[in-house]
Length: 435
Image (cartoon, rainbow, N blue to C red; front, side, top):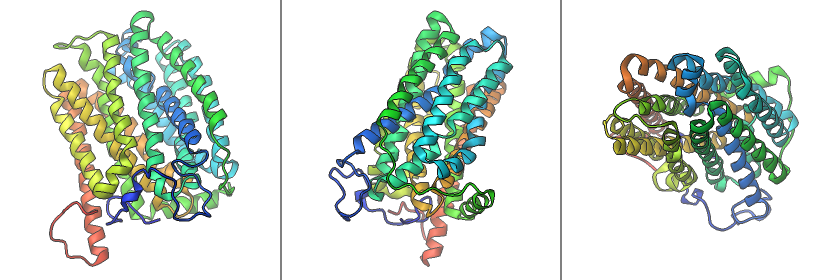
């Protein structure tokens, strides 16, 4: 597999974009491919895992104004119910990935979902903000077993030519989970309050977890690794020494800083003048996540046409355009801005996360875990900094944080392009979008 991110691969085979028939390059390769045995079950199972993960992880995000009012706390205080969950995931994703190397991807994913949904059923009964934040932190730590293990499972069980598409479908499940969780909680909370709303999400996640375990095929290409700390440290050190992976980790964190900040604060903005929307309609705003479902699931096709760096440039540009458009005091323009932000984010995330699995030649779970850790650190930072910026400078402050993060993505991608040209001995004349 060629290292591919912001600056490694200059040519990407167009066949990496969702082949319509089983890959027949190597008939002896028993890994799954679109149209082949088990692929549809596997895709749907991981899609449901993605739904449950994002629905639980961000179950309080659309409800922050109601939580603020019920518990008598500020927007920045309430934002910790989101930051604690994503921070817990970021902190525990690497240890959980090590467990998946030893005990298997499916086993760890199943256990993680079981604990997370159990905690999800306890969240509605939290008596105070500190208790709520603590439960959310535990829930995020439990969910840490999902993202890295799922990506490693796909890297092992799916043929390389179909990997971007398969991971794109998993990311699409994330977008559906994020959307449905926020829409459901918005309307339920409007009638019965935020506690009932998060309880309903917990029940939805239980159903997804059961279906996931029943559908996911047993791994056929997993080889147990070691739990020795020395081996883990050496693997992590190797990944962090890889400049291609470091760029991908930074890109994932910066994209998620934008996304976390925007969607943590948007509810507060829409409850204020000139919009003054009710909670149910605010929850429905998250239907724009459907755009993310499409952009993530078509990431393979996008890479096939533009190359990975070109796809990242497009994702960053789309996100920046959405941020600037959202400044308008017009609800249709704000919604269009959210559509562009969502499309750009999910496309960039799908491209970067799939590149991690293709770049790592060993310890794929740890490589993916480091990406997920950086990604969710970005989410926690975006949620917290975005809320603080909104408190001090309004929506323009939150947009300013997002624009700076997008500029960071562009700078890293450009530096990768320059590094690739130097490594290839090509004179640096212009920063085109190489394939």
